[in-house]
Length: 126
Image 1 (tube, helix red, strand yellow):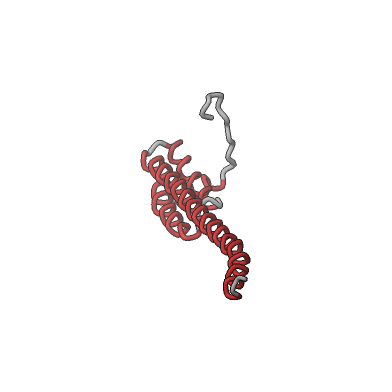
Image 2 (cartoon, rainbow, N blue to C red):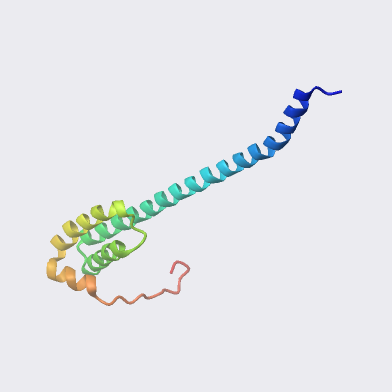
């Protein structure tokens, strides 16, 4: 005959082992999703800062078409969901400092509100 305490331990282990495994799977899934969200935020921020850098370079280059493209890019980025809320103030201040000082307030307003036509190229890149 098996002692009572051994049969109780056997029943408890039989019931708890699948529950512990399920808990481990749930914890692993939670940590993976959290990591994916953080990575996505980081990627958005990297892309945002790359676009900001490009736009500022275009504005500071002095070419009229490049300046217009840089201003439009910064204004569009400020309206985009790509821009993280915590980065909005930085991009807005940079836009005001670089774009308005470079092209003037009136020209900035005209460029920002201009109708933009997207032209697709026939190359593999665009």
